[in-house]
Image (cartoon, rainbow, N blue to C red; front, side, top):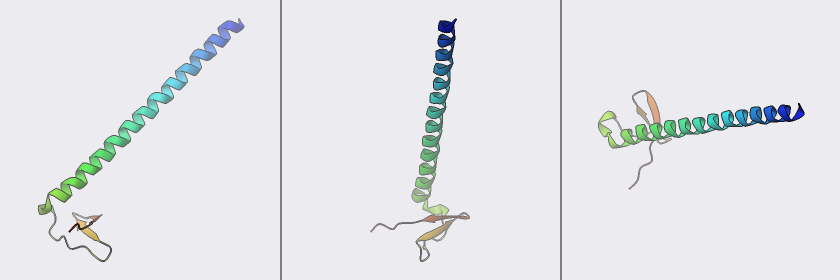
Length: 76
């Protein structure tokens, strides 16, 4: 009886660890995907200057783009 109980406990523990591991991997994939999407959107803003009427930043180096504020670093 105790061997069956230990085996069932081990099976439940392995199942829980597997579910948690799959959840962590999915969360990491989602985070990296969203990070990549945000990077691509910012790259689009940088490489599509027609979207911005005025590229002159304020004192803090911020430019208004379609209602959103982005920080611009000028490279000379």
